[in-house]
Image (tube, rainbow, N blue to C red; front, side):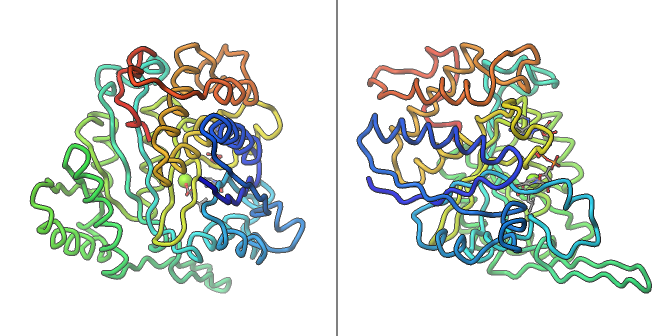
Length: 372
Ligand SMILES: NC(=O)C1=CN([C@@H]2O[C@H](COP(=O)(O)OP(=O)(O)OC[C@H]3O[C@@H](n4cnc5c(N)ncnc54)[C@H](O)[C@@H]3O)[C@@H](O)[C@H]2O)C=CC1
Ligand SMILES: CC(C)CC(=O)C(=O)O
Ligand SMILES: [Mg+2]
């Protein structure tokens, strides 16, 4: 398959972890005989510094004309620490998601048996975790009208959702549940928020056309507790932009590190693949960032194009790195392996799997491709 992929490394550790994804995709390309063309472009703080805007027009054009986008992370302390600035790196990512109409952010959360000891949480409670968050990505409070009245010092952020915005991601979540354990949990704050009440109405109505799927509703505050106390109760979590952002970072504690969790941001015409973590500026250029979230995001890209054997091969190589303890220090404090070494190991171990291959041989009790 020929694919043109826009590569937006961004800021902080973004370029380092995306470089490892590229190594892995090059390895897939060679092993399976594909042709992937990568084109790099600026976004975030680096784009502000070089072009005065966090999303230059040529970056947007490249993304619109590419088959897919690999994204690293954006954000730097000089902008986070300056509340008076009118321009921030994060605006670039938000605008890109909006311009490409990437309305669904799919964030799988799985506990890897080989790493379970690394989670600070009760091993028995977390060991069967296998959930996926369907986070609405192009609406809600991140996009509502904002204001700051410097006279009164009153700031406002508006959260609004239309029926259509809720409906399209709800269908995706229910379709995903059909191929999983057939349960959707809508997470909201319908005891307080009008937008959440609309979510409940729309989701309950759509649920009628998926009679085989169980629909459960939970308030976000309780959902945050349940995710730690009993995560295996969840299959597909459907939620809005901000709740999904927060809940998925929390979910990474189940897996052992936020450096492990990938995501796919999809719309009807475009798709972008991005780790769930941010730019972790303290780790920039220190060769300590975990590249696995970015590498598994590349795996989600392969799945998006139905390159399932290729995605399986990539996942198998990641699992091998876990079983051989080739991991970065966020997973094992004493580890001497860095970002590049882990990326090289995974890329070098991508190979065609024979029909008898079983993820269990890697001491990993997972079915094929169930991670991503
Ligand atoms: N999608 C994106 O580009 C996102 C960007 N950000 C931006 O990133 C900057 C830093 O934000 P933070 O809140 O500190 O979030 P962060 O996710 O960058 O880092 C939080 C903590 O998570 C851990 N961590 C994150 N990625 C890791 C990796 N690959 N390997 C090992 N450990 C990792 C580190 O302990 C780090 O201190 C900010 O400017 C923020 O706006 C935050 C979240 C998402
Ligand atoms: C930086 C924000 C725009 C988004 C975020 O935290 C995320 O998508 O995980
Ligand atoms: Mg986030």
